[in-house]
Image 1 (cartoon, each protein chain N blue to C red):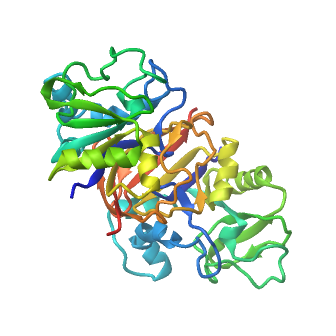
Image 2: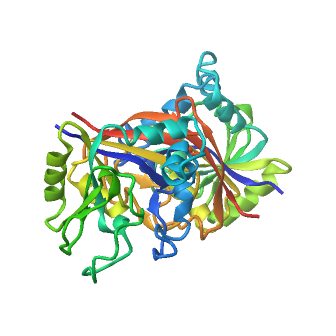
Image 3: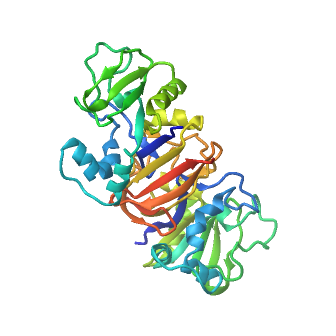
Length: 216
Length: 216
């Protein structure tokens, strides 16, 4: 049975997974890019996007492990792109160019139907309008013996956490304050939802990596 | 001019500085003692309370530095004790026995007047009924060329943060989830209040130590 995993999800010291005032210039809100500084400097990220460079070390090790054994992804629609409301046409194909870094089926949660979108390198975007349970069923079927990675954003992860559907959640505590935006845990009683902290590891540029897990 | 410092203040991964349902048996709420596990294991703590033992290392170094150059403390009343409302008598003298670990004047915020309470080892508790500004003025005078440590609890620190009165805040991220209780940052826009993250250090048992500072 595939597990539903959150990996390398960055949160600020004050608990935000995205800053305020998201728009095309600030896709994760004002200040939000600081959340990903640790990740953008890793060899794993640089190899994917520039084909070379990047730093090795603890942050890179954990970034690389985040892609291990993943057979399907689930994303919220705002992680797929800036388009809101009905799709005006089929022009938007994600933030990632012709060959997205997923290389698996990716189930995008949306209220607006759209046909599957195959990309280079094995990624196909499937648009799911029936909600998180259907997305999870379809991803489970697609993942086979591998696991499912829930990419985000904040509100998508919160929907899955609220029903204790995430098995294992790796947070990267980013050394920044965002002040406002989308708070990951506000109003979610993670203890009552069955989660506990099982491991922490120092980061190199991240303040710490934290693993939260649902009790068996 | 003395600085107002928060030192070694533990928060859970989900942002709580105390758990829910505080009472005599759970002075920092249900689950709250887990916040202090890293601190209770340090040599600094063990030397103070048992006179021997404890672990050395990064957590201990930072615990010890928390007491350096402190000329006065400020505490919320609930950190001083479990008594609520008017003082029934002078019997309660703090959680710490005859010789509290402060060894300086300690200004306790309360709505209920009480005379100064001198203890062994140089600690005198002064009860301040005129609010945080008066407490800070009196602590500033008492601290002289040294700094002032703001001990907590959560609601006391939040009062000082809301007016950007804390110069420098060291948080210990404890490897635990509390789920509910007193959240340190909820509703406080730390960025708008002028704070930024200047340093993080891995802990030994703490997930990380984080320094937040008011911009000059």
